[in-house]
Image 1 (cartoon, rainbow, N blue to C red):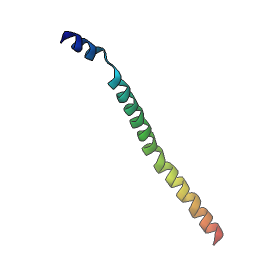
Image 2 (image 1 turned 135 degrees about the vertical axis):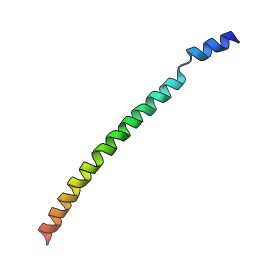
Image 3 (image 1 turned 90 degrees about the horizontal axis):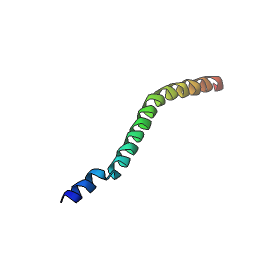
Image 4 (image 1 turned 45 degrees about the horizontal axis):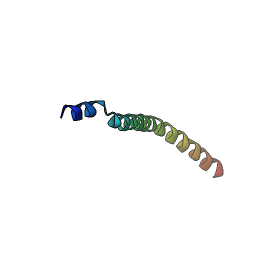
Length: 54
């Protein structure tokens, strides 16, 4: 029983999954922060093109 407890405490397989989830959360936050700015710039660009074509 003690040997199994020691193996459980040494095992770090779950740590990798947590690290990847933190990386994914960071990337998602960066996307959420950048997309509105890009969307506004694209909207302005398309409006300028539309005005120039009329």
